[in-house]
Image 1 (cartoon, rainbow, N blue to C red):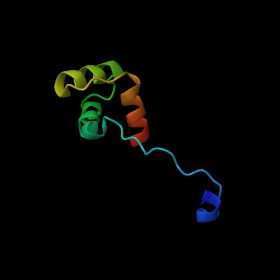
Image 2 (image 1 turned 120 degrees about the vertical axis):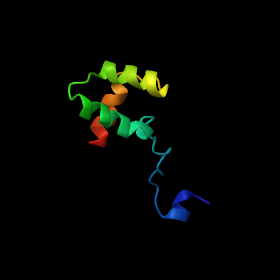
Image 3 (image 1 turned 90 degrees about the horizontal axis):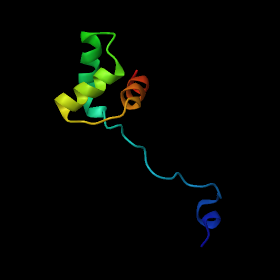
Image 4 (image 1 turned 30 degrees about the vertical axis):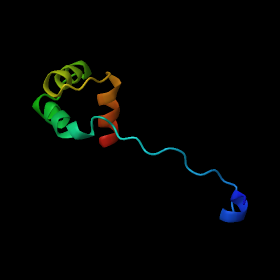
Length: 70
């Protein structure tokens, strides 16, 4: 049986699933860093995540996360 016969459409179905950011569990930590010092750099966030949470991330990851979570 074809897709057209079963669904009455030839449109493609959604592929994959939504990816969660690996920083989701650390949102409170990142927001606390910013509240502590509002001029904290991405490099400092990266280093603190590594030191305090053993989480290695690129420099763009905190930026993308905070932009999306805002």
